[in-house]
Image (cartoon, rainbow, N blue to C red; front, side):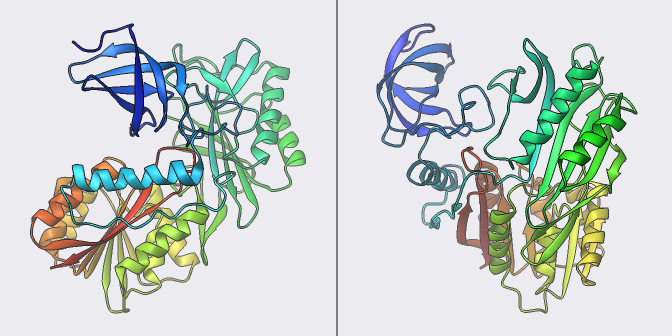
Amino acid sequence: MSVEKDQIYQVEIIDLGESGEGIGKYEGMTVFVDGGIVGDVVKVKINTVKKNYALGKVVKMIKPSAFRVEPACPYFKKCGGCQIMNMDYTKGQLFYKEKGVKDAIERIGGFTDVEVLPIIGMETPFRYRNKGQYLVAEGKQGVQIGFFQKGTHSVVNIDDCLLQSEQHQIINQIVRDFVMEFGIKIYDEKTHKGMLRHVMIRHSEALGEIMVVLVVNGEYLPKEAMLRERLVEAVPELKSLIVNVNTAKGNKVLGNKNRVLAGSETITDQIGNLKFNINPLSFFQVNPVQTEVLYAKALEYADLSGDETVFDIYCGIGAISLFLAQKAKKVIGIELIQEAIDDAKANAANNGFSNCEFHVGKAETVISELYEAGNKADVVVVDPPRKGCEPEVLETILAMAPKRIVYVSCKPSTMARDLKILCESGAYKIAAVQPVDQFGHTVHVECVVKLEKI
């Protein structure tokens, strides 16, 4: 075997993996390198050896990459939230996200003649997130409020996350001080004892509204009225303060029951000229500026004249649906989660749209039932979760034979797999592929693809 466990080898990093790890070769074997970025020449200690690859960690830098920069965040080496903040944003991060889309299209999709358009990046890849979900844990130096340490379940205490609004720092410090002052018990996942589990903060940049959600292992948080007073006084923008009840075992963040401590159960956010009511359980894109870019591109690719019926599969709270409804005759949205469908209906009404209808259920079941009942689409838009579309969804879309399909993706590999299925039918061809960066300093990338009927 060319590579052995616990040995040190010199490796040049030639690519990035899906999790942000560097990829190199040693005597023909692929080596995934924690801490390496493209262009680095490093000494790597091998931790794990498999049949076709090895895993290792940088122990010495021989020659740093031209893309390497000093991370702006002091928590970068510990926190697992940002994987590639040590790469130059424009020359490094954007380049390799675009390359990742191209590689997936070619390697997984099998497309050799498809042009991937230049990625649309952010003007400022900091302070762009409108939601933070913070873990709460006991630490050696008191209460820890932050994110998981990379590759562990230990919590890194974060005073200020550079991807979040500065107000998160103020809110978390108030909660931290309150918990320590009154001895509030912190939830322990192993024993299922303790009270406070998470702090979630949602922020509407457009309207300046803030929601704070205290996730507790019970109906009430001890001394919660006092915490309410402190937060209301210190955060004038606070419109919604919620206790979310989560008594389930495991690491799921939110339970299904909310209780309003102050203000209302929702805040309002905005994408373009459309407003959306957001409750603690709502799925809403975390980067509203780039989401407007993404959805505008989806609307452009839908190429609507005003006479079309459009299916929006995996519609969530109806954000893309309402963008489409501005130019479509009718939009039919499909979503698994009842609360999201309730939000979608309310958002359509609040924005004055009467040409939308929404159906709850599994996408593969609902779209099949609608098609069998005689419903057809001129255009289909899909925005699936990271696992991509269920095979039955793709089968029904092909049977429905819309003029165009717009595929919005958050994972290039599953997107490429689904595009291959759609195009292997011989009915469709890829007309455009547009990557959009919504998650600066992370490995994640969004993409919009236009498929046209042949």
